[in-house]
Length: 585
Image (cartoon, rainbow, N blue to C red):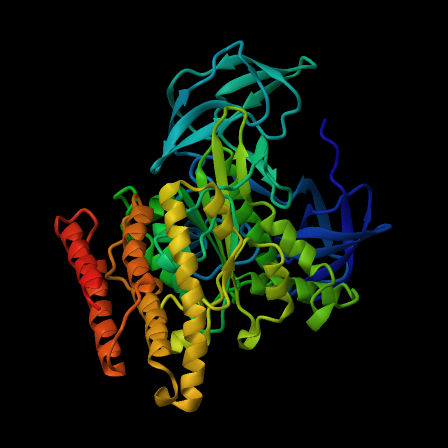
């Protein structure tokens, strides 16, 4: 007979923070339901002091009264995992928004919680394990096709020790609630296994051997893949002021990145930007599979008009789903936009808890929370030998574009790549507006040591180009003070080399041909041409000659960028450009 759940009553309320007096046993992060006005509002225990619990409610708390009943669910705030996550759009509590709209219309009501996964849809299950096999948590039992991937059905992550399969269903169509196997544990207890399971969202899901990220993740964006590469299983952040293009850059990365699964978390952003994602993603063609981009995408929506407390939940829901697909041996990409909104939710809740504030009133534990989130990225080799990756990237929205504020600084301390967007570049229409003079990547030198010969060659060229760009910027600053006449011809040429490198490689528009299957090789072709120019000793007669030469050469290479690598004219154009460079003075 099931034990009765712990209950309590509300004794104080401050916004969405409730103080609940309870009798019984509860635990941190336990799920609660607040009974008020005939509705059950979902919340989470965030602090326990004697027989008083602080509960943050993920819904508007209007109408909540002193003495209202609170029921503790005994379960932690969890994410439901199984086939059907891809092509889905959820809110911060993993409510399927399309089903909510059909159930209650287009205005999200409070207290309505629907099943995240379709209970009626049948999936074509193919077993990969047999009766008598010894298994452990996260071992493969079989698979079902989901969109463009093979979705692995695994032994529940909460299973303890070793177990023996006593029953296994044959290949066929089953719902996620139907039993597909039975496993007997070391104590003789038999466990029933279905195709779905739950995992606490705030606990990392990682079973297997953690590996060192040493391979680049191609994004299709030259300024990233060149001077500021990201490793598979690595982390990066994209801080920038309002209007600098953070969201557009994340859309570009999600479309062209070398990832099999993409998780997009819209955390506290304006509804207009989220609507753009929902409208575009189902229509965009996936350059990797030829199908629709939404087939390998899961979207978590928690806009600025939704309850603040749910922002924290949304980032953890996205991280858990990403870890789940990584456990299958897949390359997964998580994009969070923006972690600043999440930090603001932490600040608001910290204030209501009357905690001692840190810098700019953010909680003192802000840095550790951000570090815990990014630490969930990484490469993992599972028990079957497959290596999966979870690459995590977060947009940061510092007020006024100030990178010295606490959220940006706490993020820079833990990520492996910093892509700082600047107002000056976006105003100059130099997109992506990643500033090459302030950005950095810890993976750049790592790939120079561990990459293949092609990658090492490109890294060497990019390293030389970055040094020239720094010198070119210094010359440009001098020119703004003393004018072009006060600068020597050699310095003018060096300045033009930096502008040339910026124009043909760092800047990129929608007409540039991107082939993610061979993008590194294409970039190497471009880097070789750039390297020839930057390494060449030019001897021009006048400043006008130098400027005219670099303008013509820049336009010629930009036109070459529009040519697909598989096009027959691609090599011919490259040969003609190299011949011109080597013949000119």
